[in-house]
Length: 349
Ligand code: SF4
Image 1: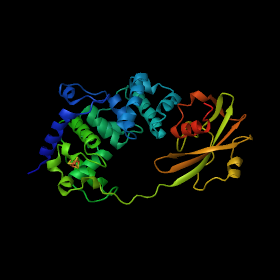
Image 2: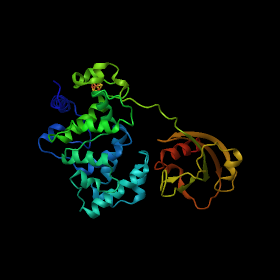
Image 3: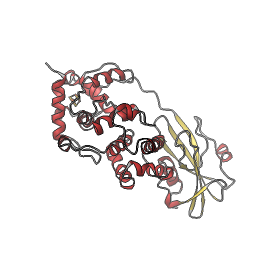
Image 4: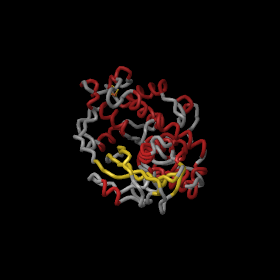
């Protein structure tokens, strides 16, 4: 009879042999020898990994920890420096939450993370997933760590027919039934690793999986069809105009309002973003200054909830209430504006 213990033994043995070597991770052998992870590094990696892949997050993680080796260093960093270092990771609200959390740990907890899930959850900007992950990985608390990877593995293991997102509570409950007091940090990371490297979304490598004998979706065939999903809504499309105003070697930037998408970030001046395309006259009327604006192309950028097409208008001239920046110093801009600036300045950079 297949029991939870059989599944756990199979996956933990696989993890002992195949755990990914990650810069924020204490591997299973070191963990068994008593080495414990640094909660700061675990927390930082989890926040970064919520929105991107390990290969993309790794250089950011190394950059952050080299520049701000402790939570106290990060807490003392100026907002603008942290936001600029975050550029390219997207979801800038997370960078603001990151700072708020670091400052709360430094100011209210003496620079030491709370070591329980409930204590972690009380920190600003630290949601249920991150609290569970840090609780398990850094403090070996038997929490239920469920992200998209874990949902996928569990939905296949138990052949859950309810489509996402309605299946979430059921998947969480099933994942929770696999958690035990023994090795909770290793267990959470073993599930993450299995989801990332073997039980992959489109082409699961079932022949390499330690759970094949226990997996209902594998037994039924077509495991890649799990988790079931409801039909996807079409992602809305928005349109805007980005203005590339240059003055010799400089380009005009603005700081976006603190609230809303890309809040507080340096940006190119833009029009509103709306569902209808902008006519040339409307684009000129919304320009930040009177100048000889020329249409120099367009770029498209995918955000999580919509796709944006930006028409690019360029002019040489002066502007009021703008921040002049050297053209070669644009790397800290959010990706959408970097893409627009590069396209608009093509041949001039
Ligand atoms: Fe995923 Fe295949 Fe393993 Fe089932 S057998 S958990 S579908 S990799």
